Image (cartoon, rainbow, N blue to C red):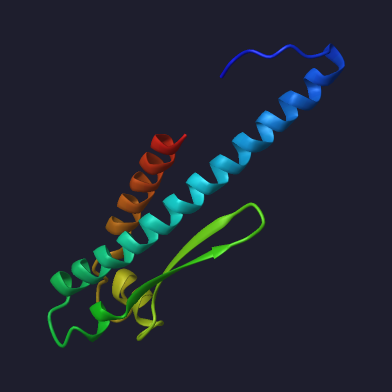
Length: 121
């Protein structure tokens, strides 16, 4: 952008406006990153669950994601809509040993989110 002349007493307002616009851009980038990795995470959990637990596939098919947005936030939630109590038991075990399938995907989601945000800003 072309440099502009302005009185010194207006500089503070101009810097504030630029920072506010940058903040809105960052919020948009982060919200888009949350949406992208949440959707991809649910898809990855469906695939990993199908691979880890053979059978009817009902557990694997249940993975879904939603994004909850607030005034200045976005939170992705990945959950099993069909069998909500089962993921914890299968991951950590109860009467039988658990089989990690969520943790590995969680670590990948965190890495993917970090990469998306860094690329966006």
